[in-house]
Length: 140
Image (cartoon, rainbow, N blue to C red; front, top):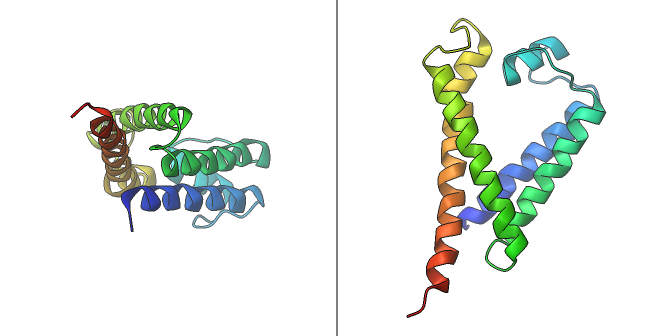
């Protein structure tokens, strides 16, 4: 399986999770407040009008990753995705060092062991996808 298929699969999975949350379900948390605190480290809404657009975004990102070597627009989307992941990874690293978050929260530990490493990994794959295409476009 190619890296792009794995990344696209991650985005499809994230889309499905957001659709699931749009139904009012809160797994893996016990309620919306706990879910919000664990996922984002603060109170935010998980209402359908918030999470369904995020689900659509993840589907579009999956399509962009799968077509990055064929469509110029997809390359721009993946480059934007990489920039967003770089920002999220940088913020995650700051939180890992205790800046702006409490080390006693679920968010701190999820960020340390899951969210930030996932962002860094996805960023690396996206950059590789962009670089691979760029190398193929260079004259011989």
